[in-house]
Length: 351
Image (cartoon, rainbow, N blue to C red):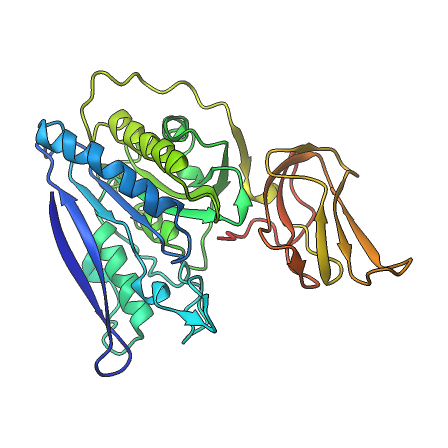
């Protein structure tokens, strides 16, 4: 294993950012290669601790000569967001200088060629970071971007071109659900990982072995040793299943039995009033149309001081807010419906 330090120039003299990159060199040039990164939203730590728990298994496999394909790992992908605090509160989702989501505005290349990356010499530090992360990941057969939600099930975002071929990955990782998407106009990292292969020859695209996904590891507070170990085992199973690592003692994953739904089926459920949230449901609950999902207490103690929110269709609760104060119009939860959502906002990548 080799460690290097990447440095990103800041937006003023004397300021720069750095993050470590770990590389394992595979013994078989024909084997699939893998790229894993965590904490692109810098406060989302389940993926960070999963990588920490994964590293001993990778070091052991390397010592035993079982790493077949190259592996690149970036456990802290966003040093800019990691350093952002406002009045003592960490702000790792949006760049405070540009107000842009750190998982937006990645370059969507027409082909997997680093020469097509834009010149960021006169851009901001966040654009330099994004360009470098794409460059580091480009050319890998497997690209995993590890995130988490507020409170939720473990689930994957997967481009429709990779499903159901990636069902073995979902099974290996032990996630509960898969959300399928087909269009990315905002430039997510996952989009930057899959779009360059959409219009290139089949021998370059290699869709039979390509993996690209945003991994949502439950909730932002789900950071503990047991979950990290379980998630690391899931990552290891995926790398073995896809031939990056050889491990004859590990059985093939069982068929995936979780929820699979298109992005268009998701209802985000905005709050009708501002106030305190009383949830009637939790992630994983099955609901029927008309079931009460939450109550917003907007005028405490008054007879008409509550607003109720009901399910617009049958489905599964995928996520909900971790905090209990809400603004009017802010989304309360993700409901994966059995049918297409009537909400015009559905079909948009939310992370």
